[in-house]
Length: 636
Image 1 (cartoon, rainbow, N blue to C red):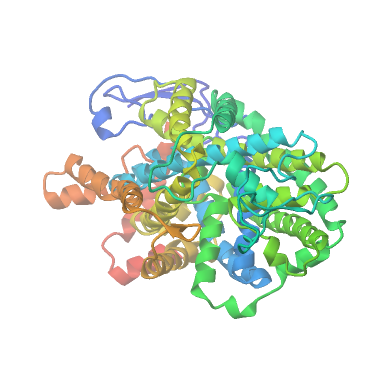
Image 2 (image 1 turned 180 degrees about the horizontal axis):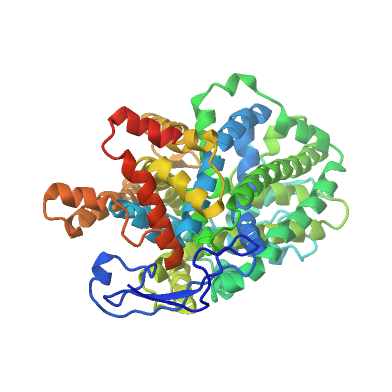
């Protein structure tokens, strides 16, 4: 291997900030470069490939802010409060914090470490075990599908943001064309508008708030079912979808150089709005009742397996673990950056944000219940998208002073939170493509993904869009992420090895890894995840939307999506075994599960030091018994 050290420094020199200051260009004897995103077959072609140097965050703070913007998002603002409410209220916090401690935090730190150590994206990082490359590819498939409907929600948010400048708020009053027994949401107008075509002798329909009818009939134009198809996109939402994708593209078009700068605003601004809304919420009449309703423990649910499953899924959604985003972001870090500190900050802040959002949301809903004269706060609560686009607008419409201001603040906060999370998801797909095709420029790849995703996203802003969104979210995100997340944990914890991972961390950060991390990575976290997966399939029920089952063709689409994501695992495993240069079948299998020769730090001088260190430490352990090897992997 021919090496040119541009700054002629000591290869092991680490600067004052703990980062490697070596800068090198490496050309192997066959003309390839380590860390370019090429697999063995590409490197064996003998073609000289000199891609541009991998970008890095301008400052460590940009990485931290980007992680906060990614992990603190819509899952905290509307998913956590109602997940907690449906699963024991205040009692839900106990399983949630346990799950966070035993699953969320260990996986978050694990993915930060492995991405930074290798400077590889979420697919290329599986050079540590080529046979498991399908895990990374399947995760990119999953996150790409999530991206398409996530931005569609941002498009709806922009529609509400635009309408929030009107006086009165358009969802605060009933309209004559709505075929329902409507109750106006505005405080000054509590009259009902009955269906004009109803016979007065017929029984009255159940009263429906104007905010709910506005969302269903004016924004979504939602169909009662999708038996006849999903319909055509709403042109007003098409504009919102386009603007949302334009914002994402403009922020990521230069990679971390542009998204890193934007991260300060994307991470901090939502907290400013959230604090304003929280102060306003707790000072409203009836707010205390709403907050107490939110945190009141239902101890009978704490042993319910469904509650623990809800805690795990909430942890996944909230922290964005096992989707590849964290690996991708940390791969742009300087070698030696203190990710241990960053992981602790992000996971802790994520929980605090969820609680603050819960207090804010239920404080306002408590005020809503107070204004309409009911003590049953549960009657004014709608989960899922209904929180952001029905319950909250309904409550704001009853504000006595300047409801438009609080409506603008809320939907602006939602939009910024959503963009921050979507930048990470889109960047994950971009990085995976550019790791494989390094000459594909950042802006070209970003534009390509934005156009394709925009076209797919049109499906979610049709009259049947929410049906499809729920379908893709369940089959394309939840099911795929859970299976591939477990595969990721067993790959890194046992095939690559927890002991070797801990030695990698010690080499990179200069710190010993405690027993807590070792036990979580090797036993506790993968075991809990496996139990959750078994429980998930044992209690599986056909997916429904608004208590209506989907037609058979929709379930076929859903299971096809799931199969496409999960079957990446065996497909790429077979390919890795076939392509391995081993002479016998057993040698091919063994070689496919071993790291590539260029695995390690991106800097070739550091990588050379690393391989010498690892070879010296691992060689004496070969040939030991099974139980001794297991003990070594767990305890070191």
